[in-house]
Image 1 (spheres, one colour):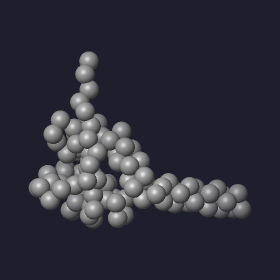
Image 2 (cartoon, one colour; image 1 turned 60 degrees about the horizontal axis):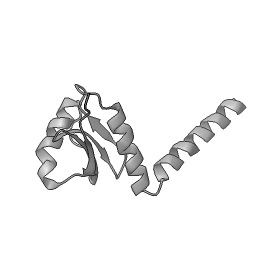
Image 3 (cartoon, helix red, strand yellow; image 1 turned 90 degrees about the vertical axis):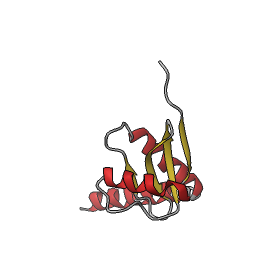
Image 4 (cartoon, helix red, strand yellow; image 1 turned 120 degrees about the vertical axis):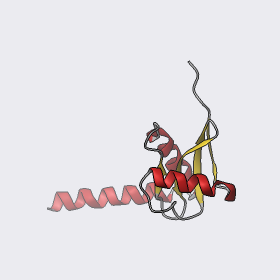
Length: 101
């Protein structure tokens, strides 16, 4: 059993049409705000994440949950881990609110 290789990379201008198609598949009005990271499998874009706001689009007809996790992890690395810290801060705030509530 062989698995297709996954490539995580920055989106290129040549990806514009593929990103529009991917957004349409995901029922998004348009691709997320640039700059973008994309997950490519067997030469096809399967998911993308905005480095600006964390918005994600993914192919709903392919198994993309793991690809989105990879994109989120790489985006957090590129941002210096800020995404992870922001999520952790929100979780702590929610926990405090529940404890007080």
